[in-house]
Structures are given as C-alpha cells and as structure tokens.
Length: 286
Image (cartoon, rainbow, N blue to C red):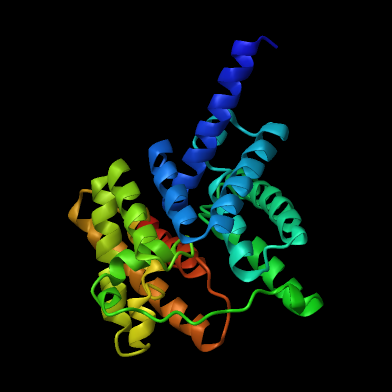
C-alpha cells in the first residue's frame, strides 16, 4: 500500500472515531467529537483515554467485520463503545484488567450495534447499556475488589443554576461544569435546534421530578441527562416535535425515578426505552 494511501486511510479512521464520539449525543460531526473528547479529558484523564481507546476499538471492529461503510463513516460503531470505555473507568479501578475489559466490551458493543441495525431496531445506546450492565454486575459478583470507590457528588451553589449544563455533562459521566459546557457547545456547533431541545429537555425533567427526588440529584444533572438525549433525539422544527420530545422526556423521568428507587444502574436506559416508546406511539399515529 502506498504511503499516501495509508496516510489517508489512517486519517479517515481517526475522523470516523471522532464522529463516533460526537454520535454519543446524536451529532454526526468530528468537531463535536473533539469537543466531547476534550470535555471528558478535562473531567478525567483516564476516562478520556478510555473513551478514545474504546471508540477506536469499536471502529476497528466494524472495519474488520466488514460492516456497511456508510454506517461506519457515520460513527455508528463508535458511540456505544466510547460510553462503555468511560463507564468502565467510572465503575472500576484503572488497573490493567480494566483496560482489557474496555477493549473486549467495546468490540462487543460494536457487534451488538450491528445486530440491532440489521434487525432495523432503533437501539440508540442500548448496546452500551447491555455491555455495561454485564460488566458492572459480573464484577460486583465475581471480583468486587475491582470496583472503584464511589464518591458522593456535592453540588456547589452555582450548580443549582447550571443543572441543565450538568445534565449534558452527565450524559458522558462528567460532573465537571466545564466538561458539561464543552458538551453543550459541541451539540450547538452541529445543530442549534438540537442544543435548544437538549436544554429544554433538561429543564423539563427537573420540573417533572422536583417533588420526587433530592435537590442534589437535580443540581448534579442526574435527573436531566436522559432527558437531554430524549429531547435531542426528537428535535425538529415543527411544533409537534416539542410534544414528542416532552413525552419522551416524561417517560425517561418516570423510568429513571423507578430505577433509582429499586437501586438499578440506570445509565441511558431511560432514554433508550423512553424514546423507543415515544416513537412507537408517534409511528402508530401516522
């Protein structure tokens, strides 16, 4: 292979990886991916490294298994793996075995993504959810010593006013306000309407959950991050899009509160199921 061809190929793979990271919030944009990655690194160097390794692993897996080129270039095999990588660094200690788990989990997430695409099922981040559930609950049962110590999040006074920004940050497990701000900028860079819907979703979620959860959960963005994704997924210029985004957001809040009540690791499952149910209702009306 000529050197220039190899260079172009490597360059394209890296761009695809960045697009995949941008797709975490449904944004098919490499610059958005760079901003997301920068935000993750600001929050945690290990998480940033894990997100990059996982997105590369997922993308390379899709190339090796010869998945559809258009799907690969759209970053569809990078976002769930990237989330798996960050989640592993959140829940497990950053030891050697954890990095092996990231590689295996990322490849599995990419393969699950392909399975759902072939079945024409809107899986969204469900491959990430499934893989992370398997990792977290297996480690908790088999090797609990590998679990990282959890530190309670204590919101600052300003967090109470910037909870929507924190909601964006929590989509990728970042409690840092600067990380959340970069994520907001990243979404707005690709789509202003998606950014507006995301902020609106975060605010609506906080209002709906106000009497059913703690002020700290709202201030830390824990209540809003699934709603951010729901609103972005259903964003549109027509007035009816606001209604669908509201319905999906409401579903996500109800599901999140139920999972929190029963101490189930929620991740982005409320977003996945809430959006899927909303799309079923929406499509039945057409």
